[in-house]
Image 1 (tube, rainbow, N blue to C red):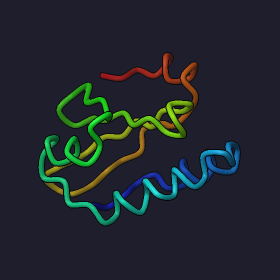
Image 2: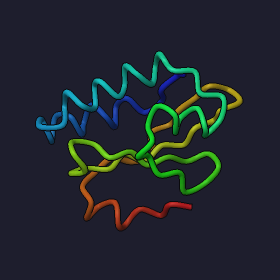
Image 3: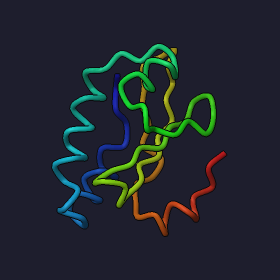
Length: 95
Protein backbone atom coordinates (compact mmCIF):
# COMPACT_ATOMS: atom_id res chain seq x y z
CA UNK A 1 0.00 0.00 0.00
CA UNK A 2 1.10 3.56 -0.60
CA UNK A 3 0.93 5.63 2.59
CA UNK A 4 -0.01 9.29 2.23
CA UNK A 5 0.28 11.65 5.20
CA UNK A 6 3.57 10.59 6.72
CA UNK A 7 4.20 14.21 7.73
CA UNK A 8 1.20 14.01 10.06
CA UNK A 9 2.59 10.83 11.59
CA UNK A 10 6.06 12.38 11.94
CA UNK A 11 4.64 15.38 13.79
CA UNK A 12 2.68 13.08 16.08
CA UNK A 13 5.73 10.90 16.80
CA UNK A 14 7.73 13.99 17.76
CA UNK A 15 4.97 15.17 20.11
CA UNK A 16 4.30 11.68 21.56
CA UNK A 17 7.59 9.77 21.71
CA UNK A 18 5.92 6.97 23.69
CA UNK A 19 4.05 6.02 20.51
CA UNK A 20 6.99 6.31 18.10
CA UNK A 21 7.87 2.61 17.86
CA UNK A 22 4.26 1.49 17.39
CA UNK A 23 3.51 4.13 14.76
CA UNK A 24 6.69 3.26 12.88
CA UNK A 25 5.84 -0.45 13.02
CA UNK A 26 2.34 0.31 11.72
CA UNK A 27 3.79 2.43 8.88
CA UNK A 28 6.14 -0.37 7.82
CA UNK A 29 3.36 -2.95 7.87
CA UNK A 30 1.02 -0.78 5.83
CA UNK A 31 3.67 -0.07 3.20
CA UNK A 32 4.23 -3.82 2.81
CA UNK A 33 0.53 -4.74 2.89
CA UNK A 34 -1.76 -5.35 -0.05
CA UNK A 35 -5.31 -4.93 1.22
CA UNK A 36 -7.83 -5.51 -1.53
CA UNK A 37 -10.87 -5.40 0.75
CA UNK A 38 -11.80 -4.35 4.30
CA UNK A 39 -11.73 -8.07 5.15
CA UNK A 40 -8.00 -8.16 4.30
CA UNK A 41 -7.37 -5.27 6.69
CA UNK A 42 -9.44 -6.90 9.47
CA UNK A 43 -7.59 -10.17 9.03
CA UNK A 44 -4.35 -8.40 10.03
CA UNK A 45 -5.91 -5.91 12.47
CA UNK A 46 -8.96 -7.60 14.01
CA UNK A 47 -9.41 -4.81 16.58
CA UNK A 48 -9.49 -2.04 13.97
CA UNK A 49 -12.82 -0.27 13.63
CA UNK A 50 -14.25 0.16 10.15
CA UNK A 51 -16.80 3.00 10.41
CA UNK A 52 -17.26 3.22 6.65
CA UNK A 53 -16.42 1.25 3.55
CA UNK A 54 -13.13 3.09 3.09
CA UNK A 55 -12.22 4.13 6.63
CA UNK A 56 -10.38 2.48 9.48
CA UNK A 57 -9.56 3.46 13.05
CA UNK A 58 -6.54 1.85 14.71
CA UNK A 59 -5.69 1.79 18.40
CA UNK A 60 -2.12 2.89 18.98
CA UNK A 61 -0.02 2.42 22.08
CA UNK A 62 -2.40 0.12 23.94
CA UNK A 63 -5.47 2.20 23.12
CA UNK A 64 -3.91 5.47 24.34
CA UNK A 65 -4.13 7.01 20.86
CA UNK A 66 -6.25 6.61 17.75
CA UNK A 67 -5.23 6.67 14.10
CA UNK A 68 -7.89 7.40 11.46
CA UNK A 69 -7.20 6.55 7.84
CA UNK A 70 -9.04 6.34 4.56
CA UNK A 71 -8.22 3.27 2.50
CA UNK A 72 -8.65 3.25 -1.27
CA UNK A 73 -8.59 -0.51 -1.75
CA UNK A 74 -8.88 -0.27 -5.53
CA UNK A 75 -5.75 1.89 -5.88
CA UNK A 76 -3.77 0.67 -2.88
CA UNK A 77 -3.57 4.05 -1.17
CA UNK A 78 -3.89 4.66 2.59
CA UNK A 79 -4.43 8.30 3.56
CA UNK A 80 -3.82 9.44 7.12
CA UNK A 81 -6.78 11.58 8.16
CA UNK A 82 -5.83 12.15 11.82
CA UNK A 83 -3.92 10.74 14.76
CA UNK A 84 -4.38 11.80 18.36
CA UNK A 85 -5.57 11.12 21.86
CA UNK A 86 -8.98 9.67 22.70
CA UNK A 87 -10.17 13.15 23.64
CA UNK A 88 -9.15 14.46 20.22
CA UNK A 89 -10.69 11.39 18.55
CA UNK A 90 -14.10 12.27 19.99
CA UNK A 91 -13.98 15.54 18.03
CA UNK A 92 -13.12 14.03 14.63
CA UNK A 93 -15.85 14.28 11.95
CA UNK A 94 -15.75 10.62 11.01
CA UNK A 95 -18.18 10.04 8.16
